[in-house]
Length: 595
Image 1: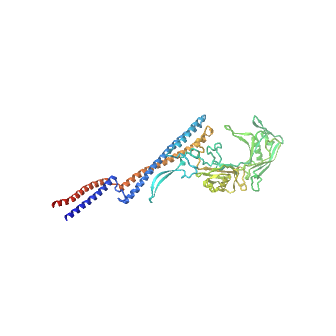
Image 2: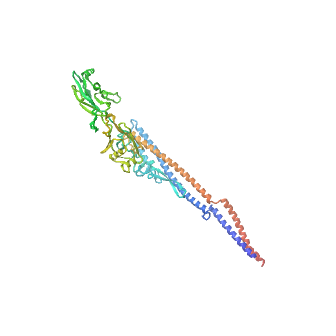
Image 3: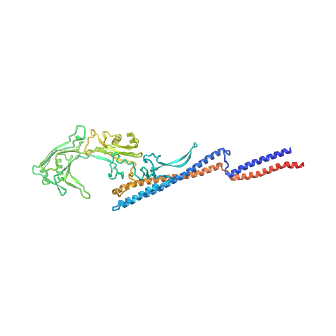
């Protein structure tokens, strides 16, 4: 019985030793690895969370590294844009100098050419890791969708509520920074989006520089003019100057004629009945009237005086008047022409027409050019547009008003959608006068307005069957024309040449100012992106620290506790060994008693 108890003691001691050794091995593993949960068997839930967080940490670490690369790309672009701003400022200063009298424009152009070339060098060298925001290769830059012309920069790591993972991307539209594009259209290459004359509805402000600057008038109106007859006294030319020959009146001499005012113009296409106008008969200038002038009419001023007196005598002085032609020379007082004068309707007859007609003319003296005549006022309710093809770009919008004869105006907009909808196209092009007439007819709803193409021109007018006005009371036109993207530089920095175009310095200044404004805005856009990426990078760094801390809280071993536990287990191991040794030694002691 004693032997059996001894064996049980040995077995118990051995089992205790094995348990202590197992715990001791686990404690050593935790201390050596620093982890209290190494496998799913240790704690399936915590191990799963920790494994996912380690994967996230690895992804965030990669995103942070990519952010650093993106920040470097932006930093290079930002510094290059800032430098370009200074170069453009220098070019602007040179152009301002070129406006001074007496400067050598050829030498200034040499400096400008060098500065312009440096902008190309700056753009070409603004590359990091093969990425260049300033020197681009984007097809149809202004027509490309923003997503297609944008650089994509990783900016964040996202795990949504469903557990799926994605990398957040920041899009940066390179139209904000493209200084030179392979196909053109870069900020320093000239902007192609100007609609120019808008198919003829706005004229050039400066016809000599249409390709240098978008210098167009914001209005294009055609006013009518009253009926005016241009006449002259008899004259001789002395040393290149016209000298009037006095018209002397003897007894019985006279000039007489009938005068019709403001009759309708048959050639205008008016519907019948036509109004014949107001007629005064036997208007006369005779020797009695001229006696106040010494018996002769000596110049155009005196002729106008006599005619106005004759008109007043017939009761039409408020409807028609004569006047010498006036000259207004530079830096000298105005003066009347001694030979030339006009007869004009005042258009105060309350009739629609504008007419001056002299009939039944007779004269016993040399009256100069005065004779039978019939002249009508010029219409301002009809004009012709000289069409040139143009394209409405995706982001371009044109606003204008249209009116006839001081009637209420209409306001209209032409944009890409308008053009494509009306013409059934997709590219925004208005290629022919027929296309332009179609668009104007679709927009302008004023009753009895006729808009029709005629070859490469467009006739815009009121319907004469409805509009019977003539002369100075008529006017047609487009006003308040604006293009939302203007002002834009139509020439590039490499096109500046004040030596070849010395009179275009101000035009080049205009373009450089527009370029400078764009580059400044682009630099600001890069600054905003730079600031955002820096914040994202700082957040990624913080997120890495938080992930590391979170993983540690889940699986890291408490080294103080593990160290204490190891010491305790080592003591237990020694005691277990001693117990086993005692248990194993007991049978030997019993056997010695029987020896």
